[in-house]
Each structure stands twice: as C-alpha cells, then as structure tokens.
Amino acid sequence: MDSQSNSPHVLIFPFPVQGHVSCMLKLAELLCLSGVNVTFLNSDIIHRRLLRYTDVISRFSRYSGFRFETISDGLPPDHPRSGNRVVDIFDSIKMVTKPMFREMLLPGGCLNCGSRPPISSVIADGIMCFTIDVAKVEMGIPVFLFRTVSASCFWAFYCIPNLIESGDLPIKEDDEMDRLVKGVTGMEKYLRLRDLPSFCRASDLSDQAFQVVTSETQETHRANGLILNTFEDLEESALIQIRKHIPNLYAIGPLHAHLKSRLEARMASPLRSSNSLWEEDRTCMTWLDEKAQKSVIYVSFGSMTMLSREDLIELWYGLVNSKKNFLWVVRPNSVAGDGQNIPAELLEGTIKRGYMVRWAPQEEVLAHPAIGGFLTHSGWNSTLESIVASVPMICWPYYADQQVNSRLVGEVWKLGFDMKDICDRMILETIIKNLMDVKRGELSRPVDRMMKLARRSIAKDGTSYSNLNRLIEDIKTSKT
Ligand code: UDP
Image (tube, rainbow, N blue to C red):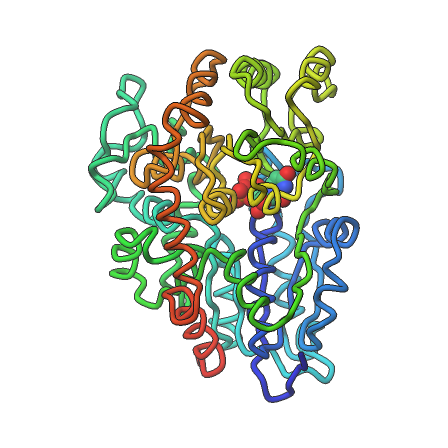
C-alpha cells in the first residue's frame, strides 16, 4: 500500500501509556489502509518496548506511507509510569515534550522534512490539548482529538463544572456514595457519586489528576473534531449530549474489531496485530485449548492497575473457592509490597484449576471458546474487547474512567456485574457462580445482542464504518 505524494499526511500523537498507544495504532493502520500517509509519534520508552515485544515494524512495513518518530516523555527511564504515578507524565509532557514537539513540527523539523508531503493534520490524544496551541493556533494545521475513554465517561468529565456548581463535588465526608448525581444530563437515573470518574473522589479540587482531566476536557471544543472509540448503539445518549457541545464527533469503534474487519476485506490472511508493551505468554492458549467451552474465567486488570497484597489474596480465594477454572494475568510489578508478585502458596494452589501469566494475548484469549467470563478492571479497551467477544464481565474498577464504565456494564447494558469498591472473597465467589452458572442464561441475551450491534456498526455502511469514512474525507479536505 503505497504512499502518495499528493495524499494527506496525518501525525498521530498518543499519550504514552499502553491503552492509548494500542488503540491509536489501530486507528493509524485504518488510515494507512485508506491511503493516508501517517507519522506515529511515540515516546522513546514506549517505542523501545513496542520494538522489543511486537512485530509492529514488519506489520507496518506493508504501508509505505507509514513511519514512526519518537520524542521524550520527559521522565527518567526508571520512573514507574503506572498506578498513581501516571500523573507525573502530564507535567513532564507539558514541560519537556511540548517544546520539542513544536521544534519537530516546524518546517524543516524532523516531522516535516524529506520527500513526504508536509503534515496536513494532527490526531492527538485528547488529554494533550497543548497540541492545539502548537499545531492549530501557531502553524495552522487542523487538530482532531482522540479520547480513549467511553463517550459516557467523557460526558461525565465534561459535566464536572456542573457538578461543582450543584455542590455534588467535592464529595463531602458524610456524603452517601450511593446517592444519585443530578448534574450529568442523561445519566441521572443510574449514576451515583460512587460511579463518577475516580478523580472526583479527591477531597481537594486542586488535586492534580482532577485538574488536568477537567481542564483538558473543557478545551476539546477548540479542536477541529473529536474521535471516540465507541459505537452509536452502545452510547447513543452520551453521544447525543456531547454533540450539543462538540458537533463534529466521530464514533468509530470498536477500533480493534473495525481494523480486523477492514483488514479481512483486503487480505486473505491478515497478520496478528499485537501492540503489547509486555511479552505475550502464548502458553495460555494451549492451556485454554484443553478446557471445556465457557468453563474459564479470564482475570486481567490492564496495564496500570496496582494491587495491594490483601486484594490479591482476597481475589485469589474468591476464584479458587468458586471452583471454576481461571486464567489470571499478573503483570510484573503490579502488586504492591515486597517485590515478590505472587505469594508462593498461591502459586501452588493455583496449579489445580488456574493458570497465571504475566501478560496474555488478550483479544485472542477473549475470543477463545473456553472463556465464559471476564473479571476486569473495566478499562475501556478491555470492555470493548469483551463486548465484541460476547463475554460477560465482573467489573472491579481501579481508577479514572473505569468507575463509570463498570456502572454502565452492570446497570445499563446488563452485560455483567459491578463489584466496585468491594474486594471480598465470599462476594466474589458468589458473583463468579452467578456469572458462570446461575445467571448465565439471563446474561446471554444482552451480551449477544450487544456483540451483534458492535459488529453491525463496523460492517459496510454501519455507523462506525460511515463515521470513519467521514473522518478520512475530512482529513483529506480539512483546513484550520
Ligand atoms: N492487554 C493485553 N494483555 C494482557 C492485559 C491487557 O493485551 O494481559 C491489553 C488489552 O487487550 C487492552 C489493553 O491491554 O487492549 C488494556 O487497555 P484498557 O483500556 O482495558 O486498560 P488500561 O491498561 O488502559 O488500564
């Protein structure tokens, strides 16, 4: 697939964490398939890990109009960049990365030199609005923002000023967390204080994460458009609300399935497309092959969650006592404490019906017939992947958008159960039994229905399919 010198040239610039990089790479590939030239700007550290653990270079070598560039995220190499330390990236990006980005984008800078056409638009992570000042305001290059959270969570973030005005925020000490919140239009019937994005739990509104997310969200309207990894049938009501403020909205998800479907339409055998920043342990696929249909619960809390040792043990007992098979991802350095990730007695006890890996090929795992349920942190990518694979969920959200997503899964879409704020072995055991046995029939109807709606949205002339085509057209013709 050739680069065309008269084709548009898009710069894609993700916030440097797994979930953001992975789905923006999928968008990059979708654009390449449509003949758009793409430069993908990675942080040095993310890029090194991608090269180490994936085949991105050979995968993208099919597209002559694609190339990677790298930039510093401004943090020292040994910084953890996960858990609650992820907020440090915001500061360092503004201080160190922003001026570098400006230099690189100027005529003659490394993003705008050589035989390729100059950058004609930027798709930047929606939590990096400084790109609007640099690209759009200073240089006249259109900027589209890509938010990796659900539309509902974006809308909740957007409504934060209302929540402050109505007195819902900051949450007071004697507030009942199960009280419904009034200020998020369209979600008044089910959104409780407990379900607001985790940053809203800060008792002090000058909290850094709260401030950053609130102010970045309020700036979205300055961009040329907003791209969301969702589909109209899933989040219609939130999308309607957002469009009242940001009319140029493109709902083009679920991106992983959208990419797969467009690749399949082009090629006889599309390549496996992992964007993992850890080495995938594929031995779990052989382990799954030996298990009965829908007999295994898959457990993974994504790329950022930090577990306490107490939580780890509670979850483990819940799983073991449920007597179900389980496949559990325990990421390196994801358990707080003495550095020993999985206590030895747990490892021994797991052998009977469990299998633990440090990182799994998650999309493939969820698609495996042996998987009957997903104990998840409700990260947005994981939620979409579970929906497409038609796997019901037990949600145990950690932070950020996950509190909102898990409420939608449990209360609105009825695709599983929300175990928010509870980590108790007996409760988990009961919920697992409900998910895998007692309520399996009840859950299967909404789960199958949503899977079909997701697939319909990315099929030819489906809503996400048409929205992506509109985005590509707008990229081809856009001016500031
Ligand atoms: N993932 C994976 N293997 C694992 C765990 C996670 O490939 O063992 C992928 C998963 O498929 C998803 C991403 O990592 O695409 C996690 O993104 P999500 O938005 O769910 O959560 P985050 O990591 O951003 O908290």
